[in-house]
Length: 396
Image 1 (spheres, rainbow, N blue to C red):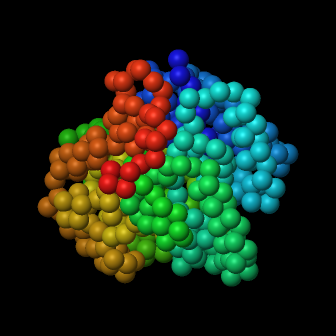
Image 2 (image 1 turned 90 degrees about the horizontal axis):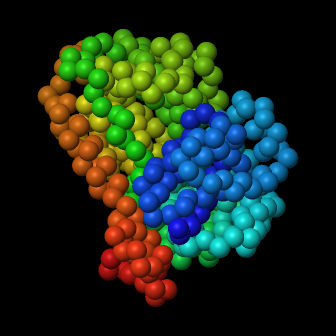
């Protein structure tokens, strides 16, 4: 069977976007490839999970610090990402270790979904904005990010630009997970050929009840969550229930519990119930390349209040599957009004229909094969298209 190597950012234990994406890719392509994965760090629990999905792990050394942090196990995915980024931009060891893996084995295809482990590949599927842009967005509402940008912004930007140029030189095809991310990279001179949202499996998200209680507003708390508008909603009497295992920099669980009923990590079944019974999902953010939460919420029939920008702008339909607002003040105003009325004209059936259409557009393996310059799933004659077809034409 043909071999596909997926290169990822670090995958610690617990919730991980990179783990979910790797698993979804493996599930979609398992009939066409033996799937391998490598990174600067993959936790023991993630290895076990991927192994059950028939993914063979070719883990890199990762360095003493990253391995030590992995053993301690108290740091989230964002922290491991930063450590991996620092390791590559200061020593280049992520590249050298991944390159060694490529040299020791022969792969038919290499897909890079990381932003910290550059290596020769057939395609780079970009999952997030450049680091200096991310810090810029975070700095608007987060003091720690603001300090980092003021003190180290110039150095971070220089190191990240050098890393992105390295990625560009090693990747003949570059694809973003949203139009917003494509524009971010084009702004720094990196040409992106296509946008392909995700291969994440959303089939496990569905309404659990035909009569939602609607007695709370659900919100996700992650590293890019904007806390201020949520705090104001709470002051206005909105009952908030929050979940998430990756709190924003500078925030603590104690602070969050003063604003909302914060559950932290919840099980898949608990999350289904939370989505299905919420009046709506509030999703304020500082920087969001795509946003799984709005799609998950709509899959459960629950509309989403979020900003009219970046990734969520491409998934939520204003006044059809949620509400798109321009700033935090409007976010609070609209959220408070909906809570006070306890009703809206949006159909939960429309939310489900729209989210299913979004998923269908991005879950067909044939799309993956076409965009990344490969033969379609139904063509079993060769692993790759001819070399001259491997670069996406401008007109495609």
